[in-house]
Length: 325
Ligand code: ASP
Figure (cartoon, rainbow, N blue to C red):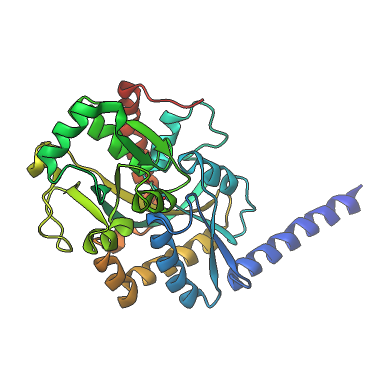
């Protein structure tokens, strides 16, 4: 009896040693970063830039796996159930904090099933239309959508995506219901807009900047308080006619709950190095965004932010009456 007890104590102690040794050597193989939206979209773009730089610091490749659908909740559910060993990490945006109010049957808890690693970037959004959309400016846009209402199609990346939230704010502000076309990400939605199959979208600058600059889409406004240095001629939504219209898409990085603290710290440190990497900073600037301040790229800052955003968006979503089962 006594021997058995001692043996199990020894086994537990050994397992502990093996565990901390593996945390110390981490990472010894490729890490997978789950992005809960389709490839080629705005969050995917942010993820790939950061993953590449973090991989250099960690001396292991970080590959991005796109698990799109249901506004990011399918990818999040996958991460919540992944082994907490540091080899699966997650890059998601504001949707991580809106999902608890939007989805009544979430299979995970956005706060307690994840270990925050740090905030990454706040990406502005732009209201855009297909190139041959009849409205030439914001006033014409308002007149056109009011006259044509549900005939106008609006693309988004599913309930809880940033494009959905921005569209919800836009439609509420102007009192019009458009016909929504959901995609697994705004990467594929942009392809359809370039093909002329869908009319309007509000999407992140990490996806829209190059299309705006090459006149492949029309732009009506940016969703930040100030105009963007990367597109100084584009008015803010407030200047265009909707005072107080403001939304930026914060991105955060997580690991599954139970990932050893030293591993989370290693990842968080690599994230902070990536956010100072001149290549990452330059690409972010080209795409109308910038890395968060260093003190926000930390686990405790992201944990507090997720909670504050859950508290902020819950009542807005409840008021708008938008839910998924
Ligand atoms: N982040 C999504 C994507 O990368 C788009 C969105 O949230 O609207 O496709």
